Structures are given as structure tokens and as C-alpha cells.
Image 1 (tube, rainbow, N blue to C red):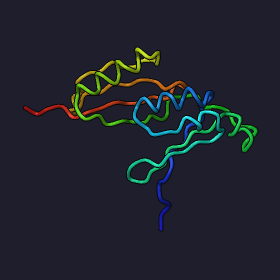
Image 2 (cartoon, one colour):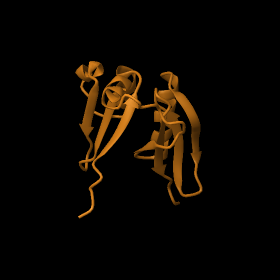
Image 3 (cartoon, rainbow, N blue to C red):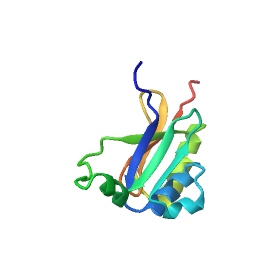
Length: 131
């Protein structure tokens, strides 16, 4: 039997700031988690998303250093193209970095990219109408 994909983990420099960002995207994360060194939530479908502070990771792996590139992103499906625009605008107005403003992608989706407080790419997308 092959291993089962179960968890996506993010290493964060400021737990409260990171969790605040993901709450804006609709994740149900209790406010009490803001001061925890490790937080995880189970998403619909069973996949887990976890956050660990840099200090937590270094307590397990003293030689840990952050990766040098943008090798990972998370993607959030929106109900429609207008929601992509609205969520992107809301996040940018709240002070988060807008990386790629909403556009109609050739593959049939409205798409945008923002960065979370640690610089991770967070994609927003919705299927474009076909008529």
C-alpha cells in the first residue's frame, strides 16, 4: 500500500498574522490558536492544513533553514469570477501583497494570486462562464 497524502504544513514567522490571513479565506480557526506553536485544521474532505512557528520547527530540526524559492502555493476555489475579484481586493485592501491581479486565464478560469504573511503564494480561482 502507498502512503496517503494527509497534511500540508506551513512554517510561519508570526502565527497570529498567518492565521488571520487564512481566516479571511474562510478557514475556521479558533482565536485561541493565535498563540500556539502548532495549529492544524481538518478541511472538508479530510486533508489537514497545519502551521508551525519557526521556533517549533527548529526545536525539532536545529539546522532548519527556510527554502529559497516559491516552490509551493495553496489554491482556493471561489464560487464565481466575481468572488475571485472581491476576495483579492479584500485581501489587498487589508494589507496583504497582491502578486497577480485577477485575470481571465486561457484555461477557462478567473485567476489571481496573493501572498500570505510569509510570502507563500495563495491562488484564487473560479471557472469562467462558457456562454
